Image 1 (cartoon, rainbow over the protein chains, first blue to last red):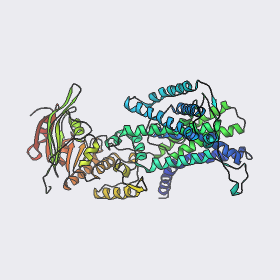
Image 2: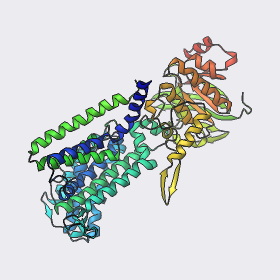
Image 3: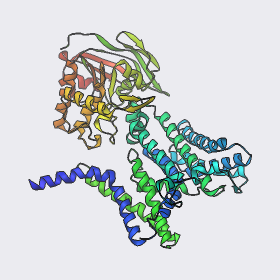
Image 4: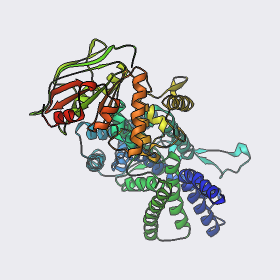
Length: 335
Length: 249
């Protein structure tokens, strides 16, 4: 009898573990880093630094996450961000007013995503991998064509605000160095909006349904192609926000912007528990995935570990995270 | 059986080509309220194609569909749903990653408005789901259970619940017992008999004679894409129906 109770408790805990297990890992990592670097790691300066570093990656990861939920993939987010950044730089250099400059990467990103979505659905590509692999080259090439392949630097403060702005907290009695980066607030706002969108709107529910079983979605009268176009467009739009943040952070449009960042974005989703087969994963998980990668890089930098080891470690964490996921699923499925 | 014998659905002269292949040729079909029509035929006889035409997934190359006496052109499954015609697919067409309730209301989720924004009304989904499952006497642990955690019979029950959640007048079922354990078949057949009593017209595609002879009132056979034979269940035998499937009269 007691044994039975124990098992039911264990079964009850599984869903929570499935939902919040990744946060546990994140907290564990923060604790370990804190023990290893007690003076620095949790200092105001370093924590805001981590958030500034993950700011634009978190946008790409969120976009790629939505695509992965539909059982698709978007390899072009890094290139979309670079192209949007270059368009922003060219428009800024041409002397456009700031409110036009800040709109350009958002529109450019959205249009790039729309191009992906229409390509995948209208051209009936066998897999989104192929379309977005193509546009990975196309968008980066286009970015270099319009900028001549050279960096373009120097933006106004308004343009740099989202990536570089600071919210002063002295009115709370804090010191001047204890400011809140605008990019941190932006991450919070964007993630909350997309959490609501994915979990509480019809379209969001349909995105999960398409990932779970596209035939079921189609049979339910859902216009699967339309939803896919929306998803890829939003993914491009988020990459455009990433470009705007990056413009603020670096004050420059440069040809190598976002190189291989699509792989970081995919890695963050996978670490955060999204399934490549679609239909699974949470916004909170993606955020945890982005944070884990950011903290790992930051912590290893603080400890002066070579970036080559960082690569080895991040790769290992991806494999480990997915293996834990496999074990977790074994526990959860009916036998 | 049923009090009214209203003619709900009639297909007239349905023909469907796929390129050079003729999948259906001049097929006719009728279903009345409270009646169960069994559709039998060998693999490739055109059963599934016919059902997909009826549900609006395929457009017929020629022929017409009449619903409650009125001709209708179906451009998508949504159109047939609006008319009260629902389909239970052989592969069940459920999203395993979503809970039972959200599957039942997939594509037609109740929402509540907050200003100009529409949000899913999870409370209402749950209430409606529980009420509907109770009505059909379907037992599951909770409406929040994910479909992938259910047994084959429970999934079939959810698929049927899904098809009847919106006052369906005609429900089409493609091989409703094909993927089930033997002990679950009975429950699903009971469910179908229950549907008939509520005045729903049911079309069951099956090649299990047990299914046909348990729930159907009339049986029609397709052979190589054409109407081959049709009879009231009372006036035929299993052996005769099996003969039709193989093209012998």
